[in-house]
Length: 271
Image (cartoon, rainbow, N blue to C red; front, side, top):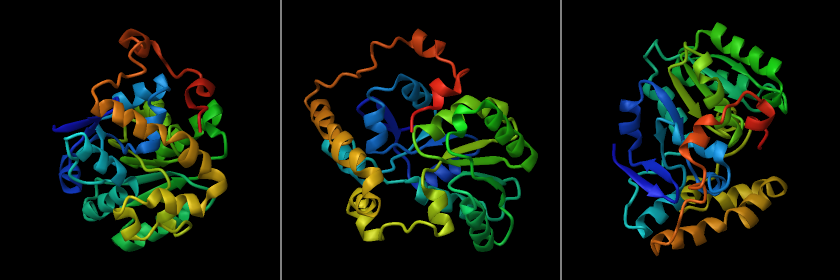
């Protein structure tokens, strides 16, 4: 499968249609600028990302950067675009049954109602809105796993923010044999419920969705977009000049393999 390397992440160079046709099983993450910045310093997150079956571009900025680096990515496939494309693609496939995990109390249930109405069948079979800090509570996580198993779902879509959602999937996927496809979808559940308004299409296409989100939620997002993420552009310049080095290269593959997630506080504590 063709891929493009941006910093220390291989991004699959697929169209939405190609991804949907290939995606019969596996784990899908959608890297964006914020993820790539986090992946410079978090070995646990790096291990989880490296283990994903699909990593597709969730950012128009990453598309621009890929052109700058001389290896253009063909399409932006954000989680909020992929997820509705996924359930529409499988509208008549009875083997696809989705469990939504994420968002505030009642929001996932509202998204379930909206999606099932659009599709014309109960493609979303169950939902759960976890309590804040659920990832640090093993009993709560066990209860969530039981709900997923009992639902009969074959797809788990997790929208609790990065890196929490990716770490949760990686830690527990082997305990969910009924789930064939795992999707990390960020704020998509809020969008599907109509609880949060997406940016206009032209804003997203111009690569300005970050600015729209910043003005919508300045208290929550100012640090990410104004302090943390600008580092990305300096690192990309280093890659263009062939002097970028993976800051996690000192973390040996053996050390990565030894990382486990027996302690939810250690593995899932980052917001």
